[in-house]
Structure formats: structure tokens, C-alpha cells
Amino acid sequence: MTRRSAAGVACLGNLIVDVIKEIDAYPGLGNLASITGVSYATGGLVPNCLLDLAAMDPHLPLTAVGLVGRDGYGQRIVDALNAAGIDTRHVGRHPSLPTAFTDVMSLRGGDRSFFHCRGANAAFGPAHIPLDEISADILHFGYILLLDALDAPDAACGTALARVLSEARARGFKTSVDVVSEQGSRFAACVTPALRHADYCVINEVEAAAVTGIACRDAQGQLLVERTRPLCEALYASGVKEWAVVHCPEGSFAAQGRHFFRQPSLALPNEEIRGKTGAGDAFCAGVLYGAHEGMELPEALRLATAAAAAGLTHASASGGLRPVAELYRMIDQYGFENGEI
Image 1 (cartoon, rainbow, N blue to C red):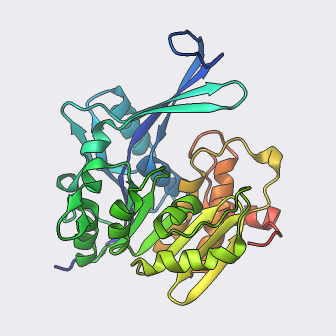
Image 2 (image 1 turned 180 degrees about the horizontal axis):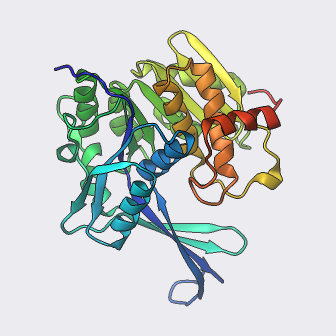
Image 3 (image 1 turned 45 degrees about the horizontal axis):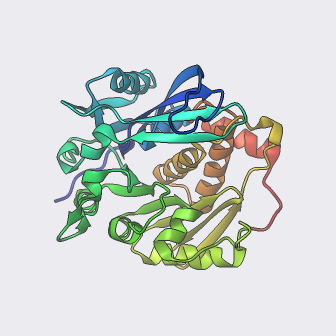
């Protein structure tokens, strides 16, 4: 089956509310600590990437596809997406499961612990993805390993997500995937099948190492630059059709066929950094925008690097993003780091 592609990007997968609770101490088992402040923020791949893209280009058609509960958290997410002009017609409401949320327990010194409820995201599966009704060029899925129904085994394709990706490509969509960082052995079973049906893969260096078995940091955490090329080439060889992109604090590196590219991070002054939440999704949004607009991969990496840096200038996941023209002005203003990557 084929379809005529329409403009725009659709993001499919995790929709989360972060409940950020400031605490005065981390209590031992059975003890009490005081919560001194509570705030809320949308999170997850779908809101983060789409709100970033909306900030970058308010004229870009954007679509959210996912599952929330019939509760206030779900309405909070839908309202935030609607306010940014994002199509939420394909955000379903689960009849019994709550909207996914994360309790972020934050100490004054900056240390945080996370308690996550998968909620409705765990039930989000192929039945909630109406491929014949979605109008977009690119479908971006994630996070793999945090979507139980899509991570489920499939006899023909390996996972349910891999089957959806295969069907999407058959209809003429470009497909893209992202992964959540997780300790464990599920990467081979859940991630590799999806890569065989992905046009784009945008993940961090820890996730790429788990997929390929090629570690690119030493015991002290230093980046092993000489391993970045084989890492990307192995990721590309897993089945990615166009761009295999890996990002890290030092910058990014990517494989496209026989070509390999490196891009240092933006030289953003430390005093400009307000938070690191959502920086990876901001980078991914930059890559997706570059792919959608027909940029060459090196230029997409430059833009994505600026988007990630913009994300660092605000404590929330998407509050620092700005129009594409302003991202290029950031490049002119700060330039890129001189260190090797």
C-alpha cells in the first residue's frame, strides 16, 4: 500500500506529566520529609519534541498520537499541546488507566529521585495508531523500552513497534525512533527490530552503546573519540535507512551510508544554563526539522546542536526553544566548542 505524503511531523508514544516536588530531606524508610513546593510540567517524547518543533516553526503542521487517562493530568497535556497549535485528535483516553506521571523528588542541592507510573502509556499499541488518518511526512516514535504494548514480541517483525514501523514505511511515511536510557538486557530484543524499519534513529551515546555493544566512554567517563565512528556505523548497520545520529554533552556524531560526520556542542556559557531536562528531545527536534526541510545531515546536526543548547537555557523541557532564525543567531553568537569530538 502507498500513500501521498503530506507535510508535517507526527510524534507517537510517551505522554507524561512531571510532578516536581521540592523536599527538605530524603527520608529513610518509615520516616517523614516535608514537601516545600510542587510544580507541574508536561514531559515525554510526544509533548517535548512537538512543543520544541512548534517553537522552532509555528507554521509546521504537527500531530500528537498517544494515550492518556480520563483525568486532570491528561487534560493538562492536551491543553498544552492545543495551545501550541498541535493536532491532538489522535490522543486517546484510556477508560481505566491514569495518565503516565513521574514524581520528581528534588532536594535543594539539585539531587533528584524519580518515581514513574507508566499508566496509559503501557497500553498504547498498534490499535491506537491510525496510520491511514495521520497527515505527516515523518512519524517519530518513542520511547522504546517505555511503551509496553509496542515493546511486546511480534512473531514476524520482532516487536509490535517494528510491525507498525514497517507498515508506516509501506504507506510512504519516513520513520524515526528514540529510546529511553535503561539498565538491563532488553535493548537487543526491543530496539534492534525497530531499527530495521527506521529511516532515522536519534539516541544518546549510552543508548547507542547498549544497542551496539560498543562503549564510547572510559572508566572515568571520558569520551573515546576513536570509537564514535565505529559506534555510529554499527548503529547504521543495524538497519537504519538514512541517518543514524548519536548525541552526547560533547556534541554529536552520525552515519549516513559510508559517510560519517561529527559536530561539537555549542559553546554556551555556563551561566546561561538553567537546566538539562529535555535537551535530548530538543536535539532530536532539530534533527527532525532538518530532515523535514530537506537539509543535508551536517546542517541538521548544526541546527540540532543549537536547539539542544537553547533547551539548556530554561529549567523546563521546552521553555528555552526559539524560532529557527534565533537558533542560527545563537550559533553566530556563541560558536562551537573547540574540543575534539
